[in-house]
View (cartoon, helix red, strand yellow):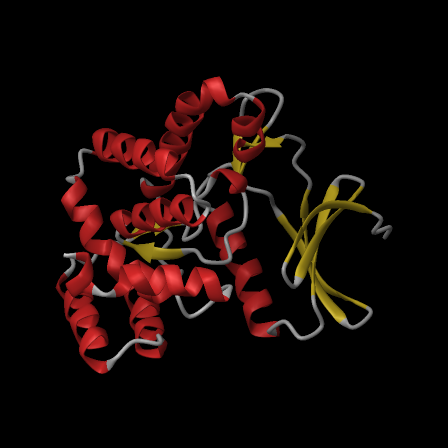
Length: 249
């Protein structure tokens, strides 16, 4: 195995190309349980028939764990949006179409979104009253079993030269409410500072899914609080500002 062709480098993990495979190598301190869960999530999502890389093996490379998948040649929607800003609306429409294709699937062996969010809200850096309000709202939201990506962003959509969109990075996949997944996507655009794309995305998602914007907005403080337990300090502060229901409303 030759790991000298870097495809992507992120905090605590690097993705390499090795022939017709992609090798995601994690830092030595990365949780083994999280790595195995990511591989299991992808293996389960493969069974839905969605266009995703195939899991080939999980192995150790020296003292680091790695997930080996099939390599998919293409460009991410993020790259295409930067290269062709005049087509931004078209790419955002494609993003929504792909996301809706995900939400039309079920994957009953995945973790439940509401249970995961409850754990994270309890661990969030919020006062007891705010946590109580968020948990009360979360409990009141309808329980669905749709496949949710959990990190659905243009950087995780790879377009092949034939125009086929492949969906990458299923480490946060759950089964639950599609509007929570949309709220997460909206907040990801905001974290990037692209509020224009956030608004275009949400408008298209609500139109194409026949979902009231107000309903997606009901999820935003919940999703922000659950996501605030990870990430950079500036992102955490931003997410916590969204998590305060009283301020948001």
